[in-house]
Image 1 (cartoon, rainbow over the protein chains, first blue to last red):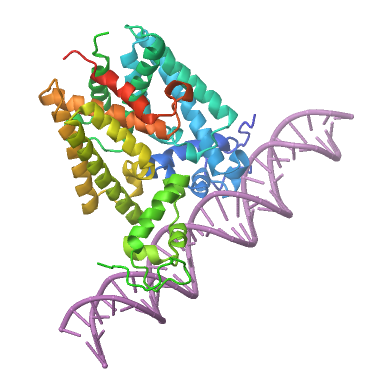
Image 2 (image 1 turned 90 degrees about the vertical axis):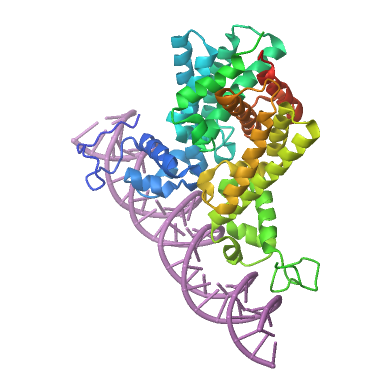
Length: 205
Length: 205
DNA sequence: AGGCACATCTTGTCGATGGCAAGATATGCT
DNA sequence: AGCATATCTTGCCATCGACAAGATGTGCCT
């Protein structure tokens, strides 16, 4: 639905037809850029509207309010995370270490999404599309833990999963926040993440 | 300096003298409450001023701007974290597991501070008081890693420290965000944190 | 082809916010 | 006693989020 039907394709504000054509997608893309620049707290609907070349009230039609836009943005992030983790799972044969590295790299490459996804005060927690996307992502995480070589069972498995999630989430968060001292981690997040995560899995049983 | 000198002590706005007496402290305390209620993004200087019973422009005198207030708030948080970790270190004889649990419990008990401390886009990263407090807290963390039973050296020690920091920071962040499924972790953050962190230290050498 | 229901977008407005400027009031030092 | 200064207030402006009302395009139905 809502395909772009205008004849002018240069994208300038002046030549744009009355209907944008894909405003919803354009606003989400603009949100990613804006959040990468200044963080989610500084996000402004009017700024997104300006970036998309529409009036200040246009976003409200698609998302209701600011929290609604961030709800869609977070849902998009969880979908992307689920896809990323599923891809890693397939390519690596279910290696949990690679899944963890994939989690960290998702956070680094899609910083804006990651920073919104785990800040529930910014969006509508009970949105149906959001919770569905969250379930997909969490299922992908659990699938990784289920494939552990040591194959822990019951509570052990649950706690191993929590530990794995915690270490990759913590590393990603600290990296994004610039909290990690540069002289200890260098500038390659993938290598740094891999050597840190490996420590969790270097255990006896 | 700036001691409270008024004769009326009921604290009501009407009976309050022209000078508040300890407005800086009162605003930081109000910030903690407000952030606990709605998160740092929704923080409003005018709301803090109302909570403290002063005019809307009073906060600017003490903190310059909103980021200045959050800078002081983050610095206060790092001081508190340093004190907390130092206390745990003394009481537990340098047990790294207990230090990790202390880190998580600090985040849970001082949620507002913790949520600001690792969001550098909210404050002035290069403030002298802030960086000094950060150094104190990071030193307390390193002191814990230095006391590891396995006593790793060089890069090993640095990576063990990063892994420990990552797992406790990640667990704390996920807990605060409500991301952890309730049926897996229960409602006691200390017990849940301890059993998760233990997995990192249950390694051969 | 004509026309109508609807989705999409615009303009205008309101209350709230952050930041600045100028003035009022208390404090402390000499 | 008096003055410099710290502290706080009032007033103002640009911006923001949200809402209401109107304009414009799309697609379906006859």
